[in-house]
Length: 143
Image (cartoon, rainbow, N blue to C red; front, top):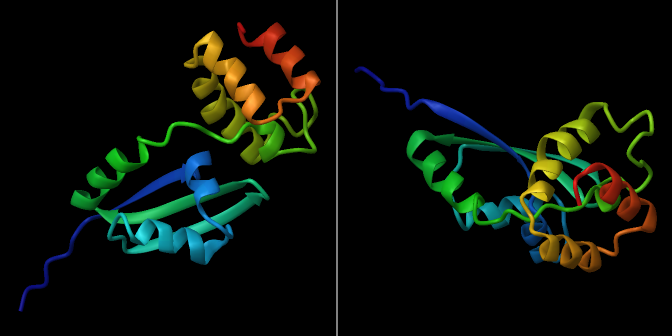
């Protein structure tokens, strides 16, 4: 008997803020349960980066991958770096290393740049942006 194999795809992402805050207790089990309600996946790995940031890799077949990509794109808002990495600040040695670099430069800054002036102000207020970050953002990221 010939057994057909379904090709599997991995989708990697940082847990968006809306999903993070919709879970009463953020842990691997609650994240898995949240995603199981939306999609059928083969395997999931969840890495806790900090108290506010989780990196998720999810294995899906091609059909479910397309459905999941469409679902996850509804959640654009990301947790700001001052919450995700409370002990670093732009310019410190760890800013351009590992998860800090990947998250801040590869994910959060593109999200930030797409916000309007009003949306940026609302975002900073919502997440209690520290003064040092406000100054840095206004001087460096075309605020």
